[in-house]
Length: 281
Image (cartoon, rainbow, N blue to C red; front, side, top):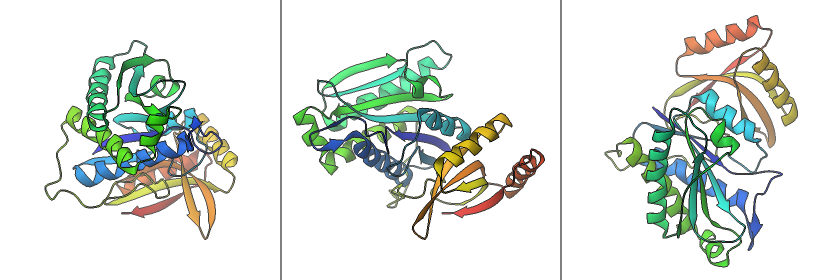
């Protein structure tokens, strides 16, 4: 299973760039959900998880921690540009690292396909010292899809058809870079990615180890820090029940129940109470 972690930029208290009746956080979330739907419904063996599934505040560290903990193969951070200009550009980390050539190769496929699909002016393939590119352990890139403060670009970004093209550019570029196979039936409608943030694949059963469920996000983040000190990576899952929102701390998601049991036992030895949530799709 290919694991693709897609990060819709900003969210919650951080709207990102705002202009022409648009907020960056809303546009990036729409694009990310479309990426998930297209990838999972049209290609075999691809699982897409988002850093957020709703308008919520997620720190940069949480985004990279989630991707690293999950063991993602590809990290894509989706943004909308601002500051004067027009068109599309993309970034990879500007440091020296062993996987840089592969990262640039994958980025190039995605970059070129987005320009092809959208007709955006190509502003170039660039490098930067962004947290989400520097702190991720897998191939990672960041896309800037038009300028929200440019009237022409903003008008396009208000079109669902254009957002679909942006998303399809991301997917087709990644598919060509990694040689994904199209589903023989052409795929079903797939998941829209608007769920609670479980990040599970489009089918099958997963055993998720839940080490705390909180109404207050800060309490959930505190538990994450406690777990990290004890040597456990975790991520937050937004869970809605009877109109209320809960933040679950997930300390492992497994295909095999025995592996979830082992994680639960290890947590118990460190003084953490947990339970196993059976998630089916």
